[in-house]
Image (cartoon, rainbow, N blue to C red):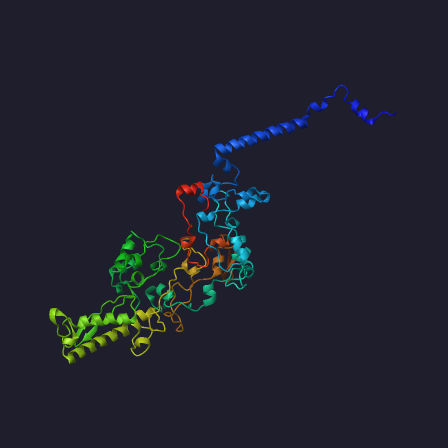
Length: 545
């Protein structure tokens, strides 16, 4: 029979029948790899038992940001720990989901965004790690998130809003490209905004001497400011008392109250008799200016003082009345002060006899004399109200006085009930954005607030005592700097320059959390943790209750 082919193959190993017991390089490599793997596994197990925090840190994505630096080696401080479901067959295929399940709310309140967001948007917002990415180094910012996190909804806001009718711009993809005009300008334009109750002209107050025309008489000079403390406050270097008052923006708008400085001491004297903390709050330099108030910023030139009076040939000087009084309360103060003045003995024609202990009681005086006294008090009170409060015509306007005059009515308007209209708090104009005046203090104020520089009145068709429109240049003025580098900025008259280059992402100006309450910043109660931890619990990463 023919020889089997397998016999031929077997003959090749004649004298070497144990060839399979002699490992080649492939088998040797496999063995060594198995030994190394076993050694590494045992070494890692020992390392994890001896220094567990150090072991966990070695396989993270990188150092945490500065605010979380103390938690570098404590993964469980932020990440949810293992649970029984993580050892299930399904959980083995989704380890990434567990590491994205953070426990930020242990330390951060993290209120939601707008309540009108859709269910899908709400679910996305609840995952902190969807927008805030850590393990990117010590200097990484957790709040300067990319625009893609914002435009995810705002590029098509109706699709991400319940009802499909958002109250904000429907499409915004970039500040430099399609950001809408500021609402306060878009809705008001060149007209006074609806809530403005003060009649004020920045141009008039910035003009030397506060006069309407260049050659007008009666310019306001330093010697017309009777209070020497206030006079020195507005005096510029080298000025004498006969020089005109020249204000600048910092005369009224201050970032810092200057606690502990000579300037603060001067302002404190101006506010004597008033709550110091209310008039001069001791706030350090911040993003917004301190509120302008009458006592420290207006009283020096606009004192609420009654005119001199003449009664039966005797003359008495006027007197100061408190600020912030409504007309009815002001009338009571004036009546009482004039009654005290007429009872002083200088006005014998109308004086009343004093009762026991020097008490003045018109009911104990003869009827004709008491009637004369009351009539004279009413006459002086009405005249003072006409001159001081709302104008010179006692027959016009609510409460008998029109809007006008040289004191209260010069600046304030009245509501339908005849009361002085409340002045709204406009310390913050951009309610849905943040703005830092400190960062912009090197730029001329008038470049961003047009119409606030000095300007004499050239025509007679402008009432500079009327309510001003909002003096903000608009969104295009911001894009001069906050836009891609090289953006052309039109200066008019055929002139332009290449601007831009400053950050212009959404997070540069806009807040996110708690945005249904835009004026509640990072210090709002809604941002507080539900149950603050002890320092030890904080560093050990206490588990959620």
